[in-house]
Length: 47
Image (cartoon, rainbow, N blue to C red; front, side, top):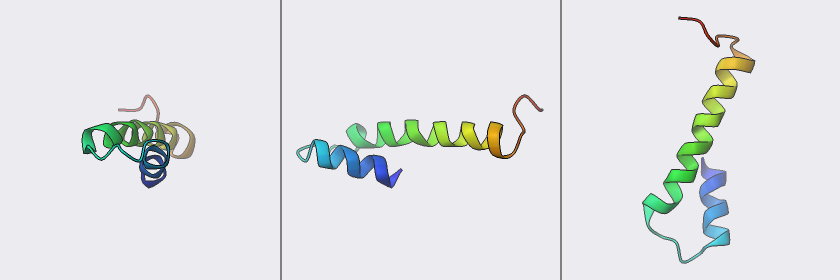
């Protein structure tokens, strides 16, 4: 999450509205959670 926020600030230093940089960070967290559920924990599709 921190890496994405840093990337947004590096590319758009004028962007200080949290809605603008937390959205992409949240999207990356969703990808990370999905990866961990499927590839790390092997719990994809289990109830």
